[in-house]
Image: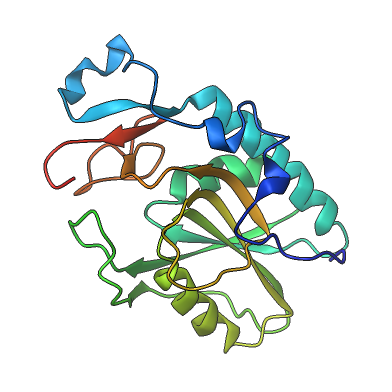
Length: 214
């Protein structure tokens, strides 16, 4: 794996590469007519499908450069990251391996409880391997912090994180994230794998949620 410092949580490095600057990402667009079935639960478009796909392609190329000599094991954190994982792994022109973990700290709530439990563990032995955790969103950082310690105890050669979203101003523990797609405002979002009570994972973009429980 190539040398390089992890990206700190300001993520200013990404602001010049996005279709829109990170600080311009907001729910300002109207909900598309084909999503009328969602009723009044959605307040606006945070990220379109086009923006997500463009950024995912960039991330895939960067990961391929960094891991050119040692393709990583991608660890998808279920269920939220499954859509991002599906697109990201196809954007990486390397022979990557994949595995899955499921952790829980939300339940049906829109805020993390801070109490983390492992619902599904890895099948792969990660000792001595380069491991890249694929996350949908980092908000408080408590779940990710737990996961990094949990996996780190298994002695991987390296352990890094690729998160699609970083929620601005909500981190309760300091994180060093190597790859980040977008920084978004502190609001509850759904779509592209993210849910509320298992709903709206199937939306192709990311939207502000204003429905029950928000």
